[in-house]
Length: 424
Image 1 (cartoon, rainbow, N blue to C red):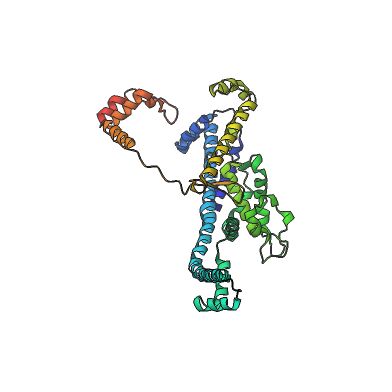
Image 2: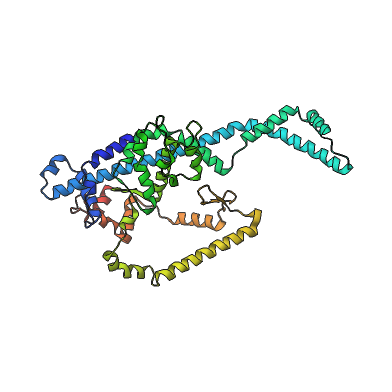
């Protein structure tokens, strides 16, 4: 990851990625970059100006965008596979390892419940007074010594699976221990000029830019304080790991946990494109390609008419809101009617979002008519050679005419049919 960010810095040093090309059609720089990458250095050197400058600028911008995309792809894989998934698997392994001891303790407590339940039923039926001593003697005779029963109860309390919120908090605690994995590239990531943010990601990007200072800080000599971090970026699942580490002085913040917490928020924001990269192809800001101002006003009427959006904005949005609310109300009513037999269920996650559970939803089998249709259409397909298939599709779509030379030159497609037929 550090080497990928260093490559971005090396290419970004030319600062050609910051050149504004708003008035240039997007496909033109892409074509020039393709030509430049496919040409040799002597040819580029002999290219007259200003075409040579345009070629080199397009090539460098393309390389910078590719380097940024590669670095962010690697960051995404690192966060998802090496950190988040690894911490989740470690939490699950601890639970699996504890199952044998949990099963043994559960069987003992189940025996206690059954025995005392029978004893209490006899007391109720006979109307006799409850004799605790007799119940303890029966327990030690039928189940085991009192000390073993109490130890099983304590062990079960320690091993029982935590609630969803506590499980997420435990996973974040394990995630915080992987700080050394991300420490080598914190400075490069925080100081990179390639990252930008929309309104929903500005707070996250500001925290990322402060990570280099936190990474260089000697927290053993000067612990981090709550006022030195952005507490609004610490969700509930992270609070225990960030604010309650036993080894730190009271009131101190765990720098390692906070840094990993910010990186997780950056990972989520990149996927939502609240934080984006520029120049980039895969991690760019999708809002940047939207028309605005006079350019939008020039085409707004035709675009809205083509989408059948002739009504005012407020009326259209109000109608969509009503339709969505009616759909949610109908689904809630049906789930309530189905009760325990419902195939779907919802659970509230620690971040407040609803999670749809479809474990009980079975797959639909293929009908006899679908099988018949698949078999019939397969038999109807003619057995032909590949050139015949391509020429047949070309007769419908004319796609062969869309092929152009790398340098936008003329392609020799006029006699493609006879030449291709002779080759095959």
